[in-house]
Image 1 (cartoon, one colour):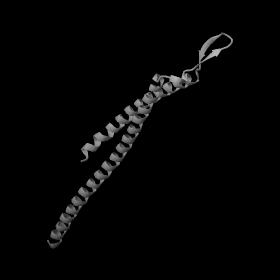
Image 2 (cartoon, helix red, strand yellow):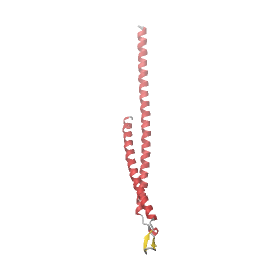
Image 3 (cartoon, rainbow, N blue to C red):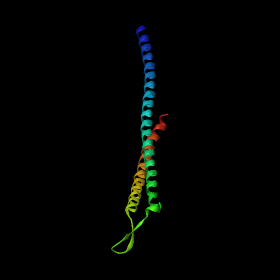
Image 4 (cartoon, rainbow, N blue to C red):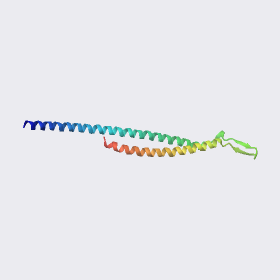
Length: 130
């Protein structure tokens, strides 16, 4: 009889200890997973900001094509034909910078979309862990 009471007491204490350890372990694991997911989400957000800056630079370069040449749009006389011809060195650079701007805009917008999508998938599981 004494042994049965003692074993049931030990069994009750072990069950209480197990419940305490289990709840502590689950809460610690949940906290660790949430912290890891938030760190990944922060990384995606930083990459999203970088893509936004790339788009901004692309827009600035693309608008470079619409700047007036002003005093740089000089002409020179072609002595063989007698016709004034424009100097196209700066014009060629304007066109190349505008094309680079368009490429940066496309790459930046694609990057923004990708990182917004990935960040949204990370944010959704984090809300259930709080």
